[in-house]
Amino acid sequence: MDVKHIQLQMHGDASGLLVALEENRNVPFDIKRVYYLLKTRSDAHRGLHAHRSLKQLAIAVRGSMKFHLDDGFEQKEVVLSDPAQGLLLDSLIWRKMYDFTEDCVLMVLADQLYDPADYIRDYAEFRRLAREGR
Image (tube, rainbow, N blue to C red; front, top):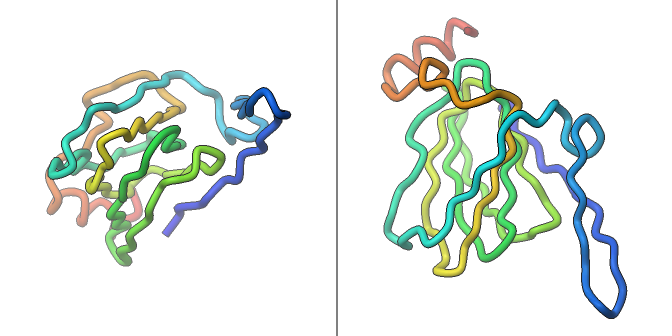
């Protein structure tokens, strides 16, 4: 499964910390879109889709949550809880996000602008495309 953790460098001193995100440096793509989820109920399930070509970097800047990931062949669960660690998600990865803490803020950087045609919302279609390698 093409899912990688990216350790982000923290800089700071006694006054506080800073994490910089730079396209094509510690973010391995051009950043076209940034969005974040917040005030998500702990019993909510988000995502439930895959992307045809979009790549994303997800960072829990506050709190924690879980990803259930599926590439059509393998499944895994990943916990995001460190604001200095990003989860790199390639295309054709089905994701379900859940178990959000009350204070969770999940920020996502994407390599493309929002395009509804890039979403695969039907799991059977996703499985077919993943197995075909498209």
